[in-house]
Image (cartoon, rainbow, N blue to C red; front, side, top):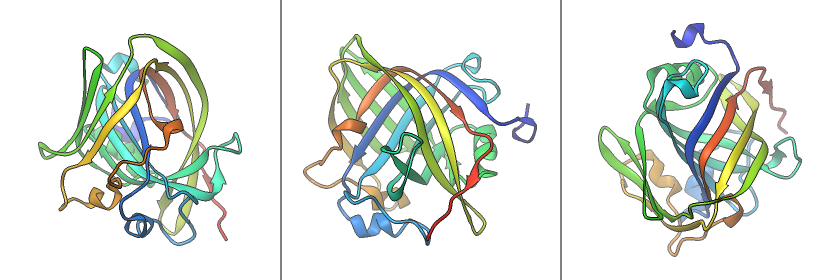
Length: 229
């Protein structure tokens, strides 16, 4: 099955997912990645999701893949709960051509990359690579139990030609106990993701730092044009 034959929406279940949020070292450089009509959230928060889908049996059509995506929290736009900020993709590094084609047709800035999550004795290391070269490394402490189940919808914004498009992404995730984000390193000053590097010392947005050994979600269909001022 090719991306052109995949019907929206697409379902992914039981991915292994590390979500992080932080304040950038250079808020102006990060904000410069936003298109006209969008503004960064008041706290200038950024987000990143590093995750792995280990088997094709976990997807409705994508097949197995790994992904790191990142970007900015937005001012004036929220998810359906009216509280969680809308988010704009600036980088989307995916191992699957099928997924890159599917999301690229919907305005996601998809390019090639791979992500690994290695968990050993409560230490989780997530590494994002482009052309085999590490560009981001995240280290966290993770407990062995499920502390809670998170559910809801996120809202991500993309740009399709002159239009800004918004899509709601439903999710259900089992959140691991004992989580602590230990370090977040951007390793490649010559890569465009460098604009999103964290401040030193790291300023975490704790509510959006977590690990889910099983996270399920839907890539949206029926996106709508975002109205901006």
